[in-house]
Structure formats: C-alpha cells, structure tokens
Image (cartoon, rainbow, N blue to C red; front, top):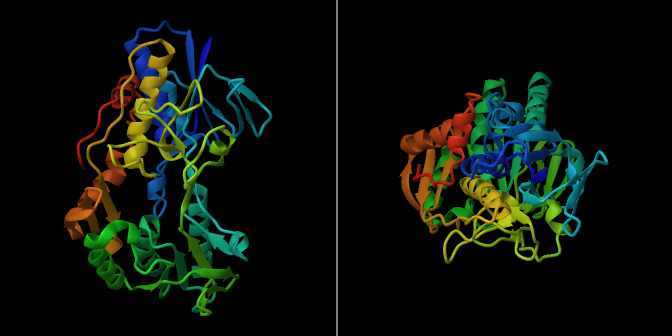
Length: 395
C-alpha cells in the first residue's frame, strides 16, 4: 500500500491529512490503495493559540474525533529522525515509518535561551501541557501565603503571545483572590514591536488600562524560585516567570540536507514542496512559503491552516501525476486580544488598525471559538468539505 505520512497534528498537520483524504476522494482512488497516517506526539489537535486563556476546556480535541471519520490513521509517537534518502522516519519508541510521500508539519516551539534558572523555574503557554502547568502553579500560589512574589507574574516577550498573556493574567489572578502585579519585559524599545506604529498606542493604552507594567529595552539575566534578575541589574520578586520570547521551527528541519532561515524553517515552492528534497512537502511553522511576491508566511494559524490544506491536496496530486495548486494568500490580518480592554484588529503587512475595543474583541472571539476549529460533528462529509483548498475571506 502506498504510504502518505503526515508528521504533526497541529493546524497544518490536521488540515494536510484531511486535505489529502479529500483529494483521494476527488480522484476516485480505490479504497485501500493509499494510507494516510498522522504521527503525532499527542493524540490530540490542540488549539494552541488559545493557551493564554484561563479556560482551556475547549482547547484540546481528540484526533479520533476528526481523523477517524475521514479514514485517516493516526499514531501517538514522537518522530525523532528523518531519512529523506531512504524515505522513512524513526521515532522515540524505536518504530520506523516508511513513506512514499511525506508532509512535514511538526510545528514550532518557544525559543528558550540558556539562562540560569529558566529550565527549573520558567513557565510558558507554548503547549497545552505547559499552559495547564502554569494554571496549577498559579492556583497553588493563590492557595498559599499572600506575598508580593506570589502575586507577581513576569511575562518575558512583548510580542503577540506575551501581550495576550499579560493582558489576561490580572483578571485571572483577581478571580483567584490575589492582588496581581503583572510585569511585561522586552528587550525591544517598544511593546508590540512587530505590530507596527499604528497599533502601538492601542496596545500601550490597553496594557495601562489592564494594570500591566511594561519594562522595555531590558532583558532577563537569570530566573530564581522567587525572583528574576534583569539585564539592567534590577531584581523583581516573583514566583512566576512566563517565557513568551521568540519562536523556532521544530528541530526536525535540521535533519534535512537544505538551508534554513533564521527561524529554522525550510524553503518550500509554490506547491509546498520542500526545495531540494524529493517526495517531501512542508506546511505550517516549519515552512517558509511565499504568500505574495514580497512576503513569506508567518508562524500563525492564519497561514498554517491553508498551507496544510494545500499541502494535502498537492501531496496526493503529486503522487498521481495530477496538476497541483499554487498557494497565494492576497491578504494579511492580525487580531490581538487585549483582555478586558478588548482587542485590536489590523490589516495589511504594515498592520494598519481597522478596529479596536469591543468590535475587534468580537472578531477575536469568533476566530478563537469558531473560525479556526475543524467540524466537531464526526461527519466525514463535513470534515472533507472543510478541507477544500479554498481561501477564507478576511475575518
């Protein structure tokens, strides 16, 4: 049987698998001649972009609910090696998985630097498990003695994840009976530097309205169990440091005989084929794909989901010598959650503010609770319909 392997079950991996299943149907490929298998370290599709939220109950979807109805196999295993010449991958369990075509969609991870104390005392919201660990830690502090360190959270990295986390934390800690102090630290001179000048005043006001302190132009030198040392020499009493600074592509890209960009991503062509590696496609955070003539994809579900759908369509088309579809996304938006202060919505690569406050918040909530979810009906027809290589309109 011909084997199509998908590594990863995030936004790109899930939609690549479902897109491939849909394309098999379109080509009327006889059942049993091609097997699509997702190999993932967890048996879930996690809605990772919601990990900053207090309620994670809707953020983890069993793969059985979204892959089994589509006839896609899934294996819970961590891929540790890729042999592109032999067309096989190996895993932490010692298993070997051969493939005829591979879609690499293993995602990204927060980039933790080699700082004293960070591995032992640092938290993150990079994964579902990491977010749950932080949640339990905060509850333990709330149940313990009331001290300034217990009620202080230092969030490192004033990018999108850091801002969303910092804006959400005051209300969460107050609901736990604490008097919160939230400090947002970034080495850049401004918060939200990636958001551009149009959104910056909105973000700065939201942080102030939420009671979040911003310390810019400074980094972290060391993390302790009850304090953090900044590069300026200042020490902050805190029992909680949440690291949100920087992202890197999954390290599996380092095993491919190709160059990588500064984020560790591999170059793909217009059809999501890995440039220089036969029989391999890549989608999501591991791939640097052209969205238009000037811009590459960003590490986001906004790009990961369509990249997955197109990779799934194209991997099957390539397998059967059928025409493939070039991916181009003619628009780009950012919607940043600002907690009780609402949200800010920008359009274009220069990120011009289009809406803010309650109006933008409604858009963000629609995205987070509806737009980025697969159908949860366990219906094959619904899942394959949603996997069509069509571009959504702006939210």
